[in-house]
Length: 196
Ligand SMILES: C[S@@+](CC[C@H](N)C(=O)[O-])C[C@H]1O[C@@H](n2cnc3c(N)ncnc32)[C@H](O)[C@@H]1O
Image (cartoon, rainbow, N blue to C red):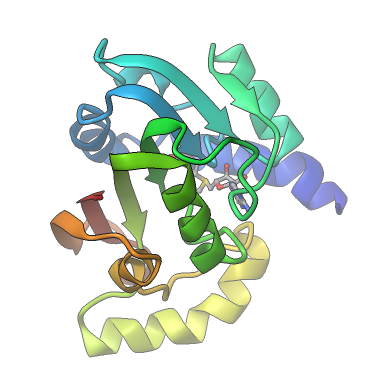
Protein backbone atom coordinates (compact mmCIF):
# COMPACT_ATOMS: atom_id res chain seq x y z
CA UNK A 1 0.00 0.00 0.00
CA UNK A 2 1.43 3.43 -0.94
CA UNK A 3 1.70 6.20 1.67
CA UNK A 4 -1.12 8.00 -0.17
CA UNK A 5 -3.55 5.07 0.05
CA UNK A 6 -2.44 4.14 3.55
CA UNK A 7 -2.70 7.56 5.23
CA UNK A 8 -4.10 10.30 2.96
CA UNK A 9 -6.90 8.45 1.13
CA UNK A 10 -8.77 7.21 4.23
CA UNK A 11 -8.91 10.77 5.60
CA UNK A 12 -10.13 12.10 2.24
CA UNK A 13 -12.78 9.35 2.05
CA UNK A 14 -13.93 9.89 5.63
CA UNK A 15 -14.19 13.66 5.08
CA UNK A 16 -15.92 13.45 1.70
CA UNK A 17 -18.47 10.92 2.94
CA UNK A 18 -19.56 13.22 5.78
CA UNK A 19 -20.97 15.62 3.13
CA UNK A 20 -24.43 16.79 4.19
CA UNK A 21 -25.85 16.08 0.72
CA UNK A 22 -25.64 12.34 1.47
CA UNK A 23 -27.69 12.60 4.66
CA UNK A 24 -31.22 12.32 3.16
CA UNK A 25 -30.13 9.20 1.21
CA UNK A 26 -28.70 7.63 4.35
CA UNK A 27 -31.84 8.48 6.33
CA UNK A 28 -34.22 6.93 3.79
CA UNK A 29 -32.30 3.72 3.14
CA UNK A 30 -31.05 2.95 6.64
CA UNK A 31 -34.54 3.43 8.09
CA UNK A 32 -35.40 0.16 6.27
CA UNK A 33 -32.70 -1.89 7.99
CA UNK A 34 -33.84 -4.44 10.56
CA UNK A 35 -32.58 -7.49 12.43
CA UNK A 36 -28.97 -8.55 11.98
CA UNK A 37 -27.33 -6.16 9.52
CA UNK A 38 -24.10 -6.48 7.59
CA UNK A 39 -22.77 -3.18 6.28
CA UNK A 40 -20.35 -3.59 3.38
CA UNK A 41 -17.45 -1.11 3.16
CA UNK A 42 -18.49 0.64 6.35
CA UNK A 43 -15.84 3.34 5.92
CA UNK A 44 -15.47 5.51 9.02
CA UNK A 45 -18.82 4.32 10.45
CA UNK A 46 -20.77 7.33 9.27
CA UNK A 47 -24.02 5.33 8.82
CA UNK A 48 -24.23 4.22 12.44
CA UNK A 49 -26.43 7.09 13.76
CA UNK A 50 -29.02 6.46 11.03
CA UNK A 51 -30.04 2.92 12.03
CA UNK A 52 -33.33 2.47 13.88
CA UNK A 53 -33.95 0.32 16.94
CA UNK A 54 -35.47 -2.35 14.66
CA UNK A 55 -31.89 -3.50 14.10
CA UNK A 56 -30.64 -6.09 16.58
CA UNK A 57 -26.98 -6.18 15.55
CA UNK A 58 -24.91 -4.17 13.08
CA UNK A 59 -21.65 -5.59 11.80
CA UNK A 60 -19.44 -3.58 9.47
CA UNK A 61 -17.04 -5.10 6.95
CA UNK A 62 -14.12 -2.86 6.04
CA UNK A 63 -10.81 -3.81 4.41
CA UNK A 64 -8.94 -0.54 5.07
CA UNK A 65 -7.22 -0.60 8.50
CA UNK A 66 -7.42 3.20 9.02
CA UNK A 67 -11.12 3.39 8.12
CA UNK A 68 -11.80 0.31 10.25
CA UNK A 69 -10.14 2.00 13.23
CA UNK A 70 -12.25 5.14 12.67
CA UNK A 71 -15.46 3.07 12.47
CA UNK A 72 -14.55 1.25 15.69
CA UNK A 73 -13.97 4.60 17.39
CA UNK A 74 -17.44 5.63 16.18
CA UNK A 75 -18.84 2.59 18.03
CA UNK A 76 -19.37 0.15 15.16
CA UNK A 77 -18.35 -3.51 15.43
CA UNK A 78 -16.21 -4.07 12.36
CA UNK A 79 -14.75 -7.20 10.87
CA UNK A 80 -11.73 -7.14 8.63
CA UNK A 81 -12.30 -8.48 5.15
CA UNK A 82 -13.31 -7.92 1.61
CA UNK A 83 -16.78 -8.05 0.09
CA UNK A 84 -15.62 -10.54 -2.54
CA UNK A 85 -15.09 -13.12 0.25
CA UNK A 86 -17.33 -12.18 3.18
CA UNK A 87 -16.14 -13.97 6.33
CA UNK A 88 -19.69 -14.86 7.50
CA UNK A 89 -21.84 -17.98 7.21
CA UNK A 90 -24.41 -18.36 4.45
CA UNK A 91 -27.94 -17.12 5.25
CA UNK A 92 -26.72 -15.51 8.47
CA UNK A 93 -27.94 -11.90 8.13
CA UNK A 94 -31.35 -10.24 7.66
CA UNK A 95 -30.08 -7.19 5.78
CA UNK A 96 -27.05 -6.23 3.76
CA UNK A 97 -26.37 -2.50 3.43
CA UNK A 98 -24.14 -0.97 0.78
CA UNK A 99 -23.81 2.80 0.56
CA UNK A 100 -21.41 4.12 -2.09
CA UNK A 101 -19.22 1.00 -2.08
CA UNK A 102 -20.05 -0.86 -5.32
CA UNK A 103 -18.19 1.87 -7.24
CA UNK A 104 -14.87 0.96 -5.60
CA UNK A 105 -15.02 -2.76 -4.83
CA UNK A 106 -12.64 -4.27 -7.43
CA UNK A 107 -14.94 -7.20 -8.34
CA UNK A 108 -18.44 -5.84 -7.70
CA UNK A 109 -20.12 -8.84 -9.35
CA UNK A 110 -18.38 -11.32 -7.01
CA UNK A 111 -19.16 -9.05 -4.03
CA UNK A 112 -22.88 -9.02 -4.87
CA UNK A 113 -22.90 -12.81 -5.14
CA UNK A 114 -21.35 -12.93 -1.68
CA UNK A 115 -23.99 -10.50 -0.35
CA UNK A 116 -26.68 -12.81 -1.71
CA UNK A 117 -25.01 -15.83 -0.10
CA UNK A 118 -24.92 -14.30 3.41
CA UNK A 119 -28.50 -12.99 3.24
CA UNK A 120 -31.17 -15.25 4.68
CA UNK A 121 -33.98 -16.18 2.24
CA UNK A 122 -36.24 -13.12 1.97
CA UNK A 123 -33.56 -10.85 3.47
CA UNK A 124 -33.05 -7.44 1.93
CA UNK A 125 -30.18 -5.74 0.14
CA UNK A 126 -30.43 -1.99 0.85
CA UNK A 127 -28.41 0.25 -1.40
CA UNK A 128 -27.45 3.80 -2.30
CA UNK A 129 -24.82 3.96 -4.99
CA UNK A 130 -23.62 6.35 -7.65
CA UNK A 131 -23.10 5.03 -11.16
CA UNK A 132 -23.77 5.14 -14.86
CA UNK A 133 -26.08 8.04 -15.72
CA UNK A 134 -29.04 7.78 -18.09
CA UNK A 135 -27.98 10.77 -20.19
CA UNK A 136 -25.68 9.73 -23.07
CA UNK A 137 -23.52 12.86 -22.79
CA UNK A 138 -22.92 12.33 -19.07
CA UNK A 139 -22.17 8.64 -19.67
CA UNK A 140 -19.47 9.56 -22.18
CA UNK A 141 -17.82 11.82 -19.58
CA UNK A 142 -18.10 9.07 -16.96
CA UNK A 143 -16.35 6.64 -19.30
CA UNK A 144 -13.65 9.18 -20.20
CA UNK A 145 -12.96 10.18 -16.60
CA UNK A 146 -13.03 6.77 -14.88
CA UNK A 147 -9.50 5.58 -15.89
CA UNK A 148 -7.98 8.66 -14.22
CA UNK A 149 -10.56 9.08 -11.46
CA UNK A 150 -10.12 5.55 -10.12
CA UNK A 151 -6.43 6.22 -9.48
CA UNK A 152 -7.05 9.26 -7.32
CA UNK A 153 -10.33 8.20 -5.71
CA UNK A 154 -9.57 4.81 -4.16
CA UNK A 155 -10.60 2.67 -7.14
CA UNK A 156 -13.93 4.48 -7.63
CA UNK A 157 -15.60 3.84 -11.02
CA UNK A 158 -18.05 6.49 -12.26
CA UNK A 159 -19.59 4.28 -14.93
CA UNK A 160 -20.85 1.11 -13.26
CA UNK A 161 -24.33 -0.12 -14.17
CA UNK A 162 -25.53 -0.59 -10.59
CA UNK A 163 -29.00 -2.12 -11.21
CA UNK A 164 -27.52 -4.37 -13.92
CA UNK A 165 -24.89 -5.68 -11.49
CA UNK A 166 -27.49 -6.22 -8.73
CA UNK A 167 -29.84 -8.15 -11.03
CA UNK A 168 -27.00 -10.20 -12.52
CA UNK A 169 -26.17 -11.48 -9.02
CA UNK A 170 -29.68 -12.94 -8.78
CA UNK A 171 -31.50 -10.20 -6.86
CA UNK A 172 -34.95 -8.84 -7.69
CA UNK A 173 -35.00 -5.06 -7.31
CA UNK A 174 -38.23 -4.17 -5.51
CA UNK A 175 -37.72 -0.42 -5.24
CA UNK A 176 -35.43 1.84 -7.24
CA UNK A 177 -35.15 5.63 -7.34
CA UNK A 178 -32.66 7.38 -9.59
CA UNK A 179 -31.57 10.94 -10.21
CA UNK A 180 -28.77 13.45 -9.92
CA UNK A 181 -27.72 14.84 -6.60
CA UNK A 182 -26.49 18.44 -6.64
CA UNK A 183 -22.86 18.57 -7.90
CA UNK A 184 -20.78 17.61 -10.98
CA UNK A 185 -22.98 15.40 -13.13
CA UNK A 186 -20.53 12.52 -13.83
CA UNK A 187 -20.11 11.98 -10.05
CA UNK A 188 -23.68 12.44 -8.85
CA UNK A 189 -26.05 10.04 -10.59
CA UNK A 190 -27.59 8.07 -7.71
CA UNK A 191 -29.33 4.70 -7.47
CA UNK A 192 -31.27 4.17 -4.25
CA UNK A 193 -33.50 1.27 -3.27
CA UNK A 194 -33.75 -2.29 -2.08
CA UNK A 195 -33.71 -5.78 -3.51
CA UNK A 196 -34.41 -9.35 -2.34
C1 LIG B 1 -16.73 5.85 -0.79
S1 LIG B 1 -16.40 4.85 0.60
C2 LIG B 1 -18.03 4.67 1.31
C3 LIG B 1 -17.98 4.44 2.80
C4 LIG B 1 -19.33 4.26 3.48
N1 LIG B 1 -20.03 3.09 2.98
C5 LIG B 1 -20.21 5.48 3.37
O1 LIG B 1 -21.37 5.38 3.04
O2 LIG B 1 -19.72 6.58 3.68
C6 LIG B 1 -16.11 3.25 -0.14
C7 LIG B 1 -15.80 2.19 0.89
O3 LIG B 1 -15.72 0.91 0.25
C8 LIG B 1 -14.65 0.21 0.86
N2 LIG B 1 -14.18 -0.87 0.00
C9 LIG B 1 -13.34 -0.81 -1.05
N3 LIG B 1 -13.10 -2.04 -1.53
C10 LIG B 1 -13.80 -2.91 -0.77
C11 LIG B 1 -13.95 -4.31 -0.75
N4 LIG B 1 -13.31 -5.09 -1.64
N5 LIG B 1 -14.74 -4.87 0.18
C12 LIG B 1 -15.40 -4.10 1.07
N6 LIG B 1 -15.29 -2.75 1.12
C13 LIG B 1 -14.50 -2.16 0.21
C14 LIG B 1 -13.61 1.29 1.10
O4 LIG B 1 -12.59 0.90 2.00
C15 LIG B 1 -14.50 2.41 1.64
O5 LIG B 1 -14.72 2.29 3.01
